Image 1 (spheres, helix red, strand yellow):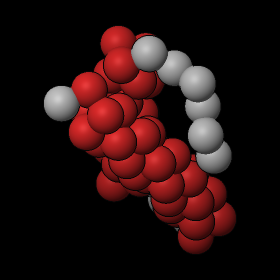
Image 2 (cartoon, rainbow, N blue to C red; image 1 turned 180 degrees about the horizontal axis):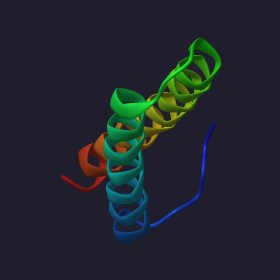
Image 3 (cartoon, rainbow, N blue to C red; image 1 turned 45 degrees about the horizontal axis):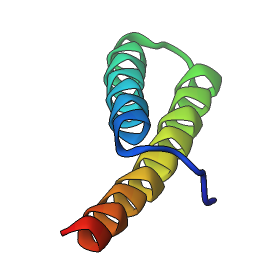
Length: 66
């Protein structure tokens, strides 16, 4: 996924994703039931995947600007 964002927007989005992952992880530790745990694990995985993509975009942007 390629999003056309400024470095500042990428940094903001990355910070939001990191907070989301932290909150989801906290929820997962207190979740009971296999379905709830599986749903939270899936959401964490989705957020982590998006975070990795945005970090790559930010790194590529930094390489271009030096």
